[in-house]
Image (tube, rainbow over all chains, first blue to last red; front, side, top):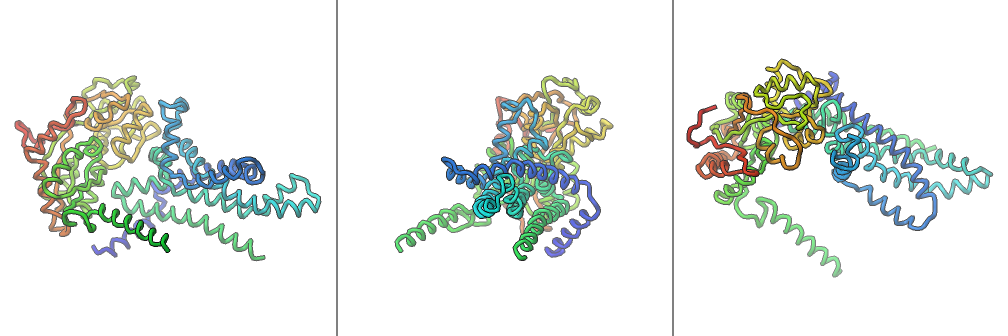
Length: 235
Length: 284
């Protein structure tokens, strides 16, 4: 078997698994979407108000807080996994809640991972919109709640970008998922940990199929967003 | 200008330091041919046994051994593709198939230990002291007590599947977790969740101090766990470093290698029993 034959067969088998609705592939996809989806929603609900609070106000140490948040965007996923583990392991302070090796534990880790991204990206939108929108709205006699609504509407694409960036980071990360989820088949095994497992089992086609789905998810979200942005900019 | 030169100097220094650590790069000692890849089970690596056996071999023969610690199934898959030069594994059925298909040559018995069923000392399924491993698994299934499986087609996983089969149980449902990870990770999970699992005694002894798991079932003849080293057939994969591999096989089965294995202890307990030249060996 030549190298090219091997590659062609690997891709062929992978697509066959995707099209045949292989339960192992779709089980992992379902866990990925549930966990990364829930974590993205929670992060958005927490992160956008925090972005307004931090970036939209003047207070002592604001610059320091912002620098700190930007630094946290580079948090290594395994370290987040490790630190959350330290809090929720049976012998630790949150041990009695019995969170370790569950979807909940994965979601906690992913929220920690994504929150700085959403706050920082949404925050820069708040800064750039704040002045222009506020002045225009005030001259038109709008109240504070109306100003907020206008900023949210005008900044919708920027906020969506922040959310999509968070989702993109979460859907492909292995560190938090492996350490906090434990890679339990059908329970916490998501696409990235399934790829790691199947490759190490020598189940190459299954890993490839999962890789293709993961690429489609990660790139698909980005594509839709960029497309919307392009349309938003041209009248 | 001066800054730029300084940057260049620092960059050159870093690059040369980096290259000096790449095997086969300029500045490395020995030839690039002097590294072989050993795919083995997580049990031999997690216990620290290889850390004891391999450095003296490298020092004496100038052959570096790169260890890829996976399950037996993955180790055999790597060897069939020619991605490794030699395997040290523990699942007789798949080993025999590997040799029969012509992928492996010159198998040698190296050592054995045994599997044990471990679990929380509270023992909710009441299996403590049972001799029959399948009966114990049957009780765990009947009580639906949490059981963590390797789930990675390793030798331990294959042994576990055969035991479930003889217990007449199809392990499925929320009480049965398939972890897809190495022995150490699975022991940690079982300890965290106060669950049962099947483990080789060596890895259990290496992890024992850190956890609250106890040996509950041992001594069943089906729990015997022999390890073999097998060279990848150079006729199928001409690029494998067959001669170096044979040196490694020779080392592990030599009197010295076997003594190192026999003397490898954690807390005064022997983890592996040498089989290559030990007197009174009784076959498989």
